[in-house]
Length: 250
Length: 270
Ligand SMILES: Nc1ncnc2c1ncn2[C@@H]1O[C@H](COP(=O)(O)OP(=O)(O)OP(=O)(O)O)[C@@H](O)[C@H]1O
Ligand SMILES: [Mg+2]
Image 1: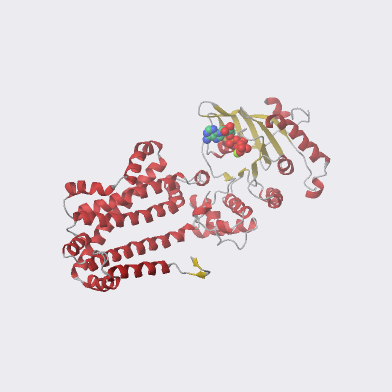
Image 2: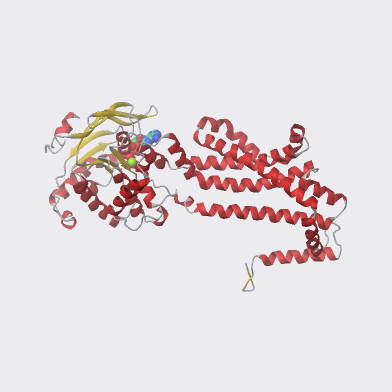
């Protein structure tokens, strides 16, 4: 970004917003927003509290379980849809429906099915993450160059060998799906816990809200944002390592 | 059909009978779906140690025929014999060179060139030695650790060639191997190909739609005509091997043969 010929770093716009927030907070313009500096101070308190450590622990566990489930089921399902026209015809509509459906609306249903606890959160993470993984895997498998498979077959390759070729050729798309799935999974874990609201970060949020500790509330929001963004960045880096050959296949 | 096996139709010049057929195509037809007749009653023999080109307008079934010989496609009827034995799948005596190179983008030049040997179960050190040898043979010495995206189109096809040579197949099946490279590289390739035929003593089945290329490199040219794909003519160019590439383009025999093929193909192109 440039302003009056000066190069302005990306972070600068963030600073403008922070200052704005501080002003709004200082003058008590909006009850919900305490000054930013107070939020930062509260952040220290939140991070060091015991209930935060416990909330993070349970959140991470539900997140990882849901994500693992999404990978273990999503990738094979994507493979199946990419390889078999019949399976694709049967499933494609449903996968696309779930991908764009407002999944938060389903969480109450999960609560009835799985109770008011971690299983519901795990299922929510799974439901948020799995569909994009399925669709990206499917797209990757579909786009494997036919000549690459013919090449492998021409040397007498067996099924496992062909499978390996398909997997490696589809890997950039699979990884893109995993990255998006991970980000959606974060949404899932937060929404799931908020709605269940007696475990993990959700419980913490309702606690702060009920006691009207808005600085703590926002500190927690910022922390969650930071976590989600670093996670996305981490996967994007990993992806880049494999990216170099993604553009090589047209 | 039988007639065109013994004389080159239209010219009356007799073509040599195949003495030692290494690949035989017997009455092969291929239908895609129930309507597209890609090939109809193809009957051909390919001489051991020769380079035979399949030439014809787009859609006449050249790729289809080559893939049937490779065992990558099943014919709807008829059979393929390699060294006298019927085959119905890929085999170690045949190796394929692809128009789009078919390199694995995640693997190095060395790994790509050694891939055929790997699939065939050759131990790592041995397959890498052999792959290295052929990488040198195709002029890519020093590029072993590079990846396909770091190479030009011509170099990529050399990797594809090294991979096919490394498995030491007797028959090399090449589907328009030079169509995706530039003209200079292409000429260099043609010369390399002819050199390879001399030193490696292999049989080449070569698909192209460049008449000049076919006349230059082939011992025999099989002309196919489209809809349905059939053999329309067989021509032995008999261009002297000693002739230099520059003199070639003035050689009367060369020009006549090119002209004759063009006349034969023209009616299908319009
Ligand atoms: N998988 C397929 N399904 C249906 N029809 C096909 C298929 N592959 C090829 N054909 C048809 O069969 C005919 C022969 O195709 P083929 O690719 O063998 O021709 P070709 O001589 O190699 O053409 P080109 O010079 O364009 O490469 C064409 O009419 C083509 O449209
Ligand atoms: Mg073709």
